[in-house]
Amino acid sequence: MATRPKLSETETLEQYRIALENAENQSEIASVMSEFGYDSAMIAEGKTLLAETRQTYDANKTEDDETTEASANFKKLREQLADNYASDRQKAKVVFRKDQLTADKLGLTGVLPQAYIKWLETTKKFYTTALADTDIQSKLERLKITTDSLSANKN
Image (cartoon, rainbow, N blue to C red; front, side):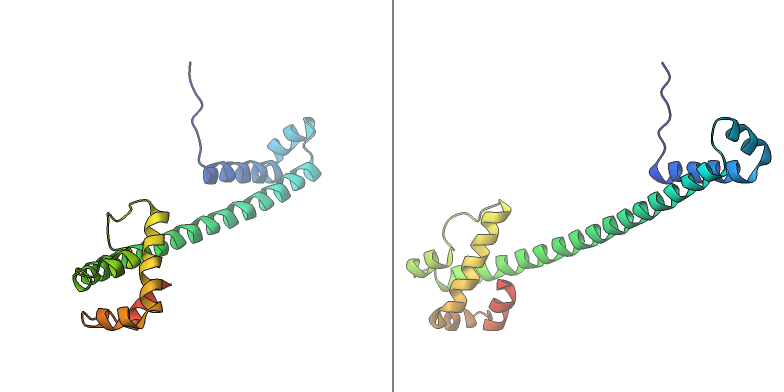
């Protein structure tokens, strides 16, 4: 059993445009189409519908492009935060290796979660807690973790 070849949305829209244009401009096609009830008014209605469809298709493609761009920006920012947090976490572990209470408070103990939401909460906890405590900030500053970098990574 033969299957019909599948056309892309763009190819389908182009086929409809050509068919409507031919039905309007080719007298032989126009006469045959009018026998089936497709007179010039019906062809004009089809062209209007095609124009609306094309406009919707173009808007959808623009939105797809914006979504792709936003996703790429998100991935870039996430990777940047992951790199910064990994470095800051390692430095903080060194600073607070003998201060278990502060290490727990900053979320430095245990395994770093892999699930995105839990990972994000862990990073927020680290930066929020560090920004709220000047003693922690002064100890982290010895390893070049400034208040500005803590603030930038918190957001």
